[in-house]
Amino acid sequence: MSETPSAVTVAAQVRVPRPRFHHVGVQTNDLENSVRWYGDFLGCRRAWSLDKFSELTHSRLPGIRELTEMVLGDVRFHLLGRAGRKSEPTESAVQFQHFCFSVSAPEDLVLLRRRWTELYESGRYTFAIDEQPTDIVTDDDGVQSFYTYDVNGLEFEFTFVPDGQS
Ligand SMILES: [Fe+2]
Image 1 (cartoon, rainbow, N blue to C red):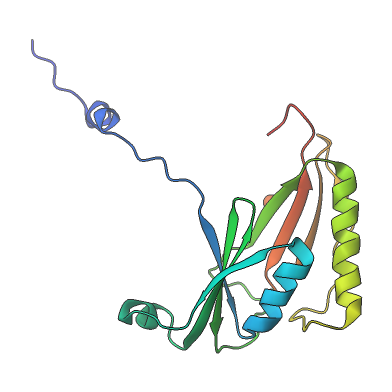
Image 2: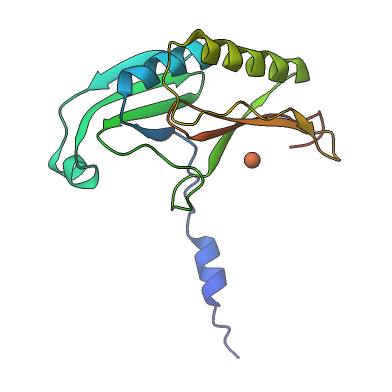
């Protein structure tokens, strides 16, 4: 009796690529505002900017004017300056709902939350959403988090995960 490999067995023999995280694309209708805020709040450095785009980019992102890459350690933000209306997080739309950064000590959550408020109160930025960060909440596993918005109304989570959890 001959054995015919199942589709699953065949698939398992094919090399599966292992994609790694590379960058987050953030759309904004005020690029300079976003560049300053990502620099001042998260300490991102400006890596490069681009103001000429391929036909493909123009067709994917009509109205794109400029792209600036901001870098924080292994994380890259591609800030895409495009005309558009203000984002409205209370509407349901197909988009990234939030992205999350982890910190190595719970005190860092307090510092980041304070930093966010200092920058908000400085009056140097325009915020699409006039809302303060949430309190720092702790779940049953001891994971602590707070949520806040960037200047464009995109939601961030900052979290502290105790040792031994992922
Ligand atoms: Fe989350």
